[in-house]
Image 1 (spheres, rainbow, N blue to C red):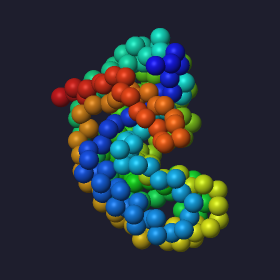
Image 2: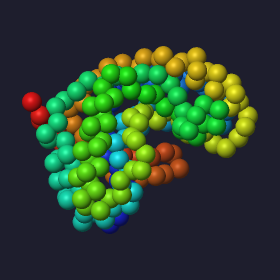
Image 3: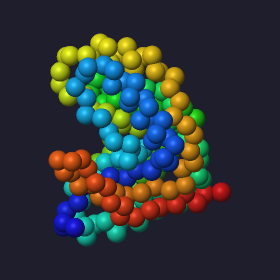
Length: 192
């Protein structure tokens, strides 16, 4: 592994939620928009993107993530709804949102922000909106209106409920075939 690793903190999702999200992707692919779809095996709830991190800093990052996660209780999270950032008429990122469990996921994110902020990682300026990225729109006006209509039609899409028991720090290596993710450490939610 390189001395510098592209790093992010995320919650893994179960296969059932991934397969339901893949069904949503199939529906949205009816639009001829130029979208790079996320393979189901690469789907996760991203909590914080750290960027390039020196491998020597990873143990301290892992300790900070554990400090953030351990006091919190495991919670259920519902993958629900379809949408786009910044919006459906000029989409860049396509996502599945969160129904039940959104506030708990935001609380987990905020705890991570505090702990990692103490290590010098920049905090987000905007409020965290938990989501599961399912596609990235390449700049092309073709099919965008149809895609927006399909997203709107699937606004109530349900991808399933799962329980968040742990947070994972991942190394991400980008390749032409797609990214590969390697877990660097796990942090359990141990609150009562």
